[in-house]
Length: 324
Image (cartoon, rainbow, N blue to C red; front, top):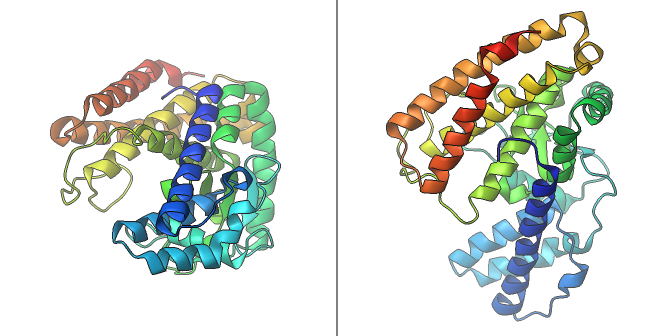
């Protein structure tokens, strides 16, 4: 779970997409008595978002709503996926239909409203994002191929959007309901280092979502709130577990990156100093999250195993990894 593993990531995506096809087949054939050609179905992030909304309607036995959802948005189920992985799609651009906007917006609404109203990003920010992403891709593919290949395996679409609310700032987001997509605010991820960290951050959430398919991981009640390492607001234990896992993966990534020849190309002569500063910041945040979970977390055996792996990973990166 902690180290990059492209083969495992590809298998993970295949399993989630197979479950999507089975779920939509069930909703339409059993719930709506429709004939479904699952062989023509594409597992896009929008298709996952449609299935999520239809499942929510099925939970309350709202058959008319299920019928409406598939009637209005079902066309996205047969639309081919983009040829390349990590396909960059600006919000408001021609690659997204009105159904995509509706479905993806529903999937990316977060618990504190930072991504509740997505709008098209600045063209300048998009251009700067493309430049940094292309550079990052070349350097990671050369120097850290497992990290790059895992990212490509996990992420089909990178959505670029900004908030329509000036008081609601976000860097990135991911959601199981939009599996295969990550959302990035290009205004905050134009330079190589913050972009790399955002990509690892959000793709790590996707990796952890997979672990929840067969296991609850965290047994604390949703109304319990604790101090969070990545937010000012107190959060449920589940959110803190996600944050702590993600922090461990970011630390591992930076510890791998700082030992490569990619640093000068990506970050210039002060690159090592920047990475060291981020490592110290992330390590402090990890320690905070780990302490909260260790004291208050109620985990399944699998959850405890993942947490132990995260702790062992961070300890293995140690202060010695900060040396250039």
